[in-house]
Length: 353
Image (tube, rainbow, N blue to C red):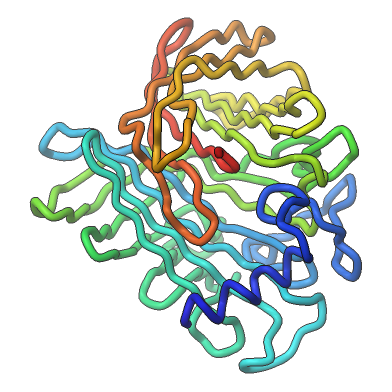
């Protein structure tokens, strides 16, 4: 679908002023469903779309190593945004879809964007059998009967200068953030439903302008939906996923505000998948070095501290120029960290001016 037609419709989903939270995610949610405490998830249905909520995503990142010995990062994301809470068919359908795919190397960053409309087969998600797609990009379950649909996936995407075809196998359970999946995002109480599958082992093929390479590594899938996940004064976020040598994981984010301190949240994930949530203030995020990226000063090195777990690490981007110049631009790329612990992970930063 032509972006010049799609973007004005996206603006309608976010209200009249994009200043109300990053990309309008702080606008009023009147008419849409809103998350409530004590969620009762049901699978496989909740792996699929929730059209009564305004915004939703299926968001996968992976840290990979090639047979050539080089490090890589890949991203595959499908966003759903609703024009209105009522459903319709065909071109009158209320659901808009946006796909982002990216590949990062030490010296290059490639990305592509796809835009689509629900109701006409161009993009969508089915929970059983699970499949998420936009055009010829796809995330398809290959899980055996009786297993969780997200426990095994085939992932494909391509852009002008890259493509990948990856197999993912989960070695641990789904993880629920916040209070059993109810993830608070601000002191005002805005929230989302949020869970992850952070335990994928990955293998497959990555093709770049200099040719194909076989890759292996680890991946992390986030599932999240809401209708007003930000306060009106929150203007961006910094999201981290870290993978530790002993198999543990850490998710942490800071939501920046124009008028108040950054709101933080974290989830410590044990090697067995047990999750411990940490409230606002427990995680400290300190930018250490900025770099000019696409005309913006972006913090590409960070200090992360979670005293409750004796974590004090510094992160470094594989490629500081990992800019996604998409309809709503942001920074997204693989990182390494060292200090009290060492490992690899991923970083997403939005709203950086």
